[in-house]
Structure formats: structure tokens, C-alpha cells
Image (cartoon, rainbow, N blue to C red):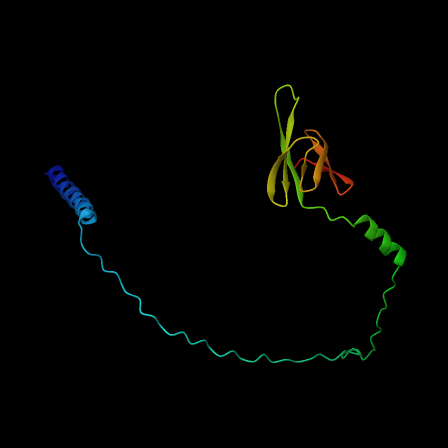
Length: 156
């Protein structure tokens, strides 16, 4: 008796689920005018901007807690050291990453994959892209020339 009662309950639930599905399918294909809400234009009134409160800081001449005077440190400049750094860093290299190599089985032609300033490029030995020339390359690293300077890049 209990089995019949469970079967009837399950049959009733299955009928309700199928009825709900059939209603949804019928409702989807039924052509009824859809209510489209019209948008009424509203006037925009910007809020008035509050004027910024400005202030200035006074230079501190003494420590308020210890009562001692501050001693300003003067920077020493070496002109010879600065000129050497400028000569070495005149050229700003673009952001370059060596991503890998693609070659055939006999390795007669190799195509290197570079990422220059976020864009990927395929380049062979001797080719130039964006003023960057591929001088030499292997599976582990490659040499690039940019504005007369050569730099090695390892595989990422």
C-alpha cells in the first residue's frame, strides 16, 4: 500500500513538472505584445561644486618635542658621475621579451617570437622590426641591435 502511495505522489510531481515545462515553451512561442517602458527625459541639474579649502605649510625650523634645530643636508653633486650615466643610458630600449623559437626539423630556418611593447612579432635572423634588428639567436637567448647598441635577451 505504501508503494502505491509513493508512486502516486511521484506521478503527481512529474505531471506538475511537465506541465510547467510545457507552459514555459508555449508562453515563449506565443506572440503577445510586450510591454515596453517609455523613458521620459529628465532634466539634469549638476550639484554645485564646493570650493576647495587651500592652505600652506610653514617650514619647520626646530623639533617641537626636543626643541633642537633641524640641520638641512646639502646634496653633493658629482658632474663626472652624472655624465657617465647619461652616456650609457641615452638609448631607452622598448619593452622586449623573448618568447621562443619555431624551427623545422633540420633547423635550417628559425623564426623567433618576440614581444615588443606588448605586441607579438615573428622575426628571422637579419630582419628589422620597429628599428630592432635580430643579430643572432638560439634556443636559450638572442641578440638584438637597437640604434647601434646590442643587447642579449634570455628566453622567458
